[in-house]
Length: 520
Image (cartoon, rainbow, N blue to C red; front, side, top):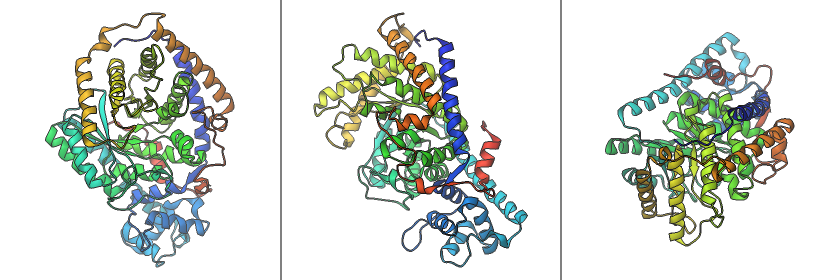
């Protein structure tokens, strides 16, 4: 594939600076936990269901520990002691706790050795669930052909999981490689995971473990019908990032939108809370071989795609470094960017190629997530379709990994099934017709593409130097990403963060970090 002649020493400096920034954040993460992390532990131990008022049991158990001032030790040991007392399984024990038949939070009834042994048993079973979904994915890849990248990614979003299921299978039959079930509007701000199948959503369908299961079964059928591996995606970013990662792993999802920067900037989630949640969620994704998708493309919806292209690249570098601190390998890093330059800019397509090529060369082994034009979409569906076609060409030429379908009516309404078909039809045509274009061309030295690429990298280096000196949190405070300012002590969810006490334990996190990357 054609490459721009970039300076490898400069690239090495950029990666080193990004790692320093990520390590600064990690030093903060290591001292804290959150209610979402503790609820995720309970879910992986087998706690599920809701009480009579509809409150999820993982929430209720953590609330009880908070009320007793016992949360600083984490939920694991307390729940292990409760199971020793009940002599029952995790689900029944949680119900007994909710019914006040067990004094949850009083760990002194059993010896530390007894509690630790029970925790090890629970942890081993939880890790086994993560290992199982990784093995299931490997079996599917061995059984079904995996299409060439860019993989074609299509969204369904009816609000009704059963209708989503039908649309997903139709999309797979038309050539989609990846199906994403977009979440109901503002679910990222809910500090609980809704329970059970849902048929009413707003701009999307609620992310629940039951809905994950329904869609996974439908796409497994689609794999058989189309003799291709069809991946399933949902959204983890938000106040329940760690819990949704746990649910997704248990139901064999393939990808999750998983990015703290997106939550901080665009959902006003407290930065400390979401960095903590992100680390544990990504450890789960690493063990389960779930590809994460990041949201740098969103920066260009609020800031100019030429003036601020460097912030996208800088954030990708930081996200890569934070991902590797959470043991994600290159093949699991769906780093995001977008085709968002004003179409009236002369040679704008060449700038788009430069930006896409920078991403491809900085992260050569990552399945990059490339987003279609949305900022300048209009009600002129024919012009919108033309813009999407240029985006399709840029994607296949630069060898992107995950290609989100641009749809001609998305500036008017939630696209209908036939609109999605038109989008897939255009992608199929362009990808087939121009599949080898990137291998046939060369970028002119000192031409527009190469000059633009070097300009962006120089801006990235200056910016990362500044962020490294100030810290990422200060850069966020100052609005250096997406022109949006967020305070350390602002945003939603800060009350769910707590300092780990001297007796704190999270055996799942400890084992995942200790065992490192698993490659079967």
